Image 1 (tube, rainbow, N blue to C red):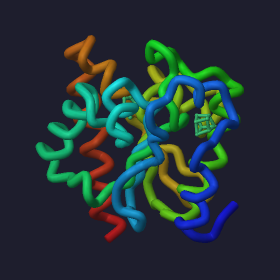
Image 2 (image 1 turned 180 degrees about the vertical axis):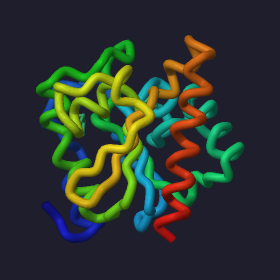
Image 3 (image 1 turned 90 degrees about the horizontal axis):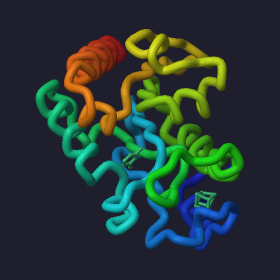
Length: 185
Ligand code: URA
Ligand code: SF4
């Protein structure tokens, strides 16, 4: 673990700890406020993210941005990252060993950002951060506190593109995040 961003960022350059390194264009490290109160964690880069090196810039990300602006959440006050930092082929779910190989970078990012709240976007984020025993359908929308961090599991924004009903639930979950953020002020 590194106690500063420079060394952490250095350590990931040219990472070849898992086979996702083979097809990537860019490592999608993470973006946003390094002192954010709220961190958002997704699954892994898609094609647009891989091309640009920035998380959640494609369709799902744009939908998430719409929810943010509707709720008065600014991308600049958040820190956004993923379970794996290189794009899985055809956007498949990261394999256990890929997530395992990559997670220490994310853990180090959490240590440096020190967020009060972590939003887990979808099943992959939920299971890799809080444990395989959790399921997104039953866990979403409810706070889970662990080691002084409040976790809010919710739908992955890509799921909203496929199911209109989930948009409302996603919105309500982010509203809870906004409210807790204000309480923590
Ligand atoms: N889906 C994710 O999980 N992360 C991204 O960065 C983009 C799409
Ligand atoms: Fe390294 Fe993570 Fe990319 Fe795998 S996904 S090569 S562990 S940066």
